[in-house]
Structures are given as C-alpha cells and as structure tokens.
Image 1 (cartoon, each protein chain N blue to C red):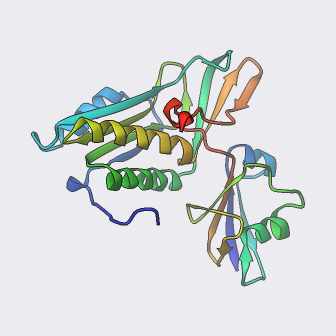
Image 2 (image 1 turned 30 degrees about the horizontal axis):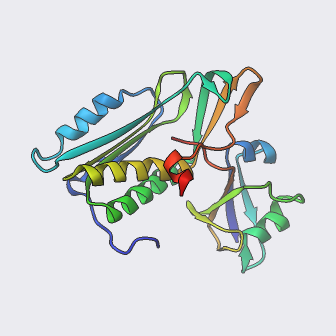
Image 3 (image 1 turned 90 degrees about the horizontal axis):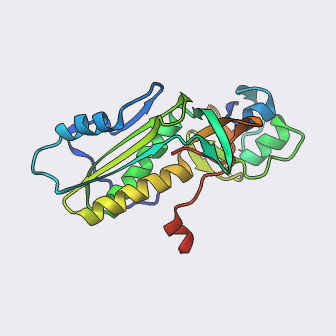
Length: 162
Length: 78
C-alpha cells in the first residue's frame, strides 16, 4: 500500500469514466464542475490528450484503444487516490476513450479542482503521468506499414530531467 | 484449483487467445510457475506486465484458486 490515509471524495460523483464513443471534454468538464459546490475551489487545471495524425515521422490515419475492463478503472482510481493524498486536491475527473479513434478526437481528459493553483497543477500533472505509466490501455495505430501496436509511452520532459 | 488467465494486446496475439481457464494441481504456485508449467514452453516475452486480480504484481506472486491472472505488454494509454 503506497498511501497511508484514505480520503473520500464528497458527493459520490463518477470521477473515472471510460467511454467507447467520442466525447466532448469541455462539456464533460462543465457538467462536472456545475455539480461542485460554488465557492468551494479556487483553481481548476485540466489536461486534454488528443489523437495526432503522426507518430515518429509516420502518418497515422486511425487508432484503436484496447483496455482491461475493471482493472483500468481500479488503477486510475488508485492513481487519483495517491494524488489526493499527496496534494491538497478537492476533486478530480478522468474521462478516457477506448475503441476506434480518428485524428483530432479527444483521448483523455484529466481535471483537478483545488483551493490553490499549485496543488491543482501538481495533481493534474501527476495523474496524467501516472495514468500513462500504469493504466492498462494499449494503442494500435493504422500507419503506413499497416496495423502497429504502440510499444511505449513518451515520458513527461520534466520527469526526464530528474 | 482453477485459475482464469487473460491476455491483452500483443500478448493475446502471441498466445493466440484472449482467455483460458487452467486447472492446476499445485497448492503453492507462483505466476512464474503458472507460465512455465501450464501456459507456454517459451520464455515470457520481455517487458511483459502481470496483474493478479487486477493488481500489478511480479512473477514471484503466489496465486490461489479462483484468481484472475493477466499478462500484457507495457501500457500506452493517455
């Protein structure tokens, strides 16, 4: 167990959502934020990952995202719980696509609410970085050579310096 | 005891199936023992990740009856 204290989120909102159809991250963000108590947070930081039409100098026309149902949600919840215990985060939302995706479609939304910007920035960065390293998703791209499994995720440039 | 085994992404293609139910006789069996004794004659592909009951673990983890063991390549979400 990597965390010592378990802090429950208020409200019982659905914080981790896996979507098999395209979604609008900004509408999801607005809907979720409207469920939070007005005045209870002073900062919101969000990250939206979008599908590119290239990867390592090769053009990519489509992608399929596979996942491990059940473990994916559990692992993202573990990642978010660790961030909650490390930073002064009040609430979070993670939405992640699976299935067939085309360029320019959103893949992932991570949003973090906090009283102050530092915790919101730090929490959001940690959640997306840990999600990319741990959540069981696999990308398979339709590229010029045919169908290719993506073998590795890029690392956060800040983490590379450490 | 019966173990449920799942494979994802390139591991599924490597093994030729997505899921297997394995009947094992040992009472103290590790993930590594499951792989070599019941699943494959070859080595586990490099960088393969393992989860037991949807939690990451290493090859020395002991499995028990009814467990779900999953093998998959490095993850690439986000």
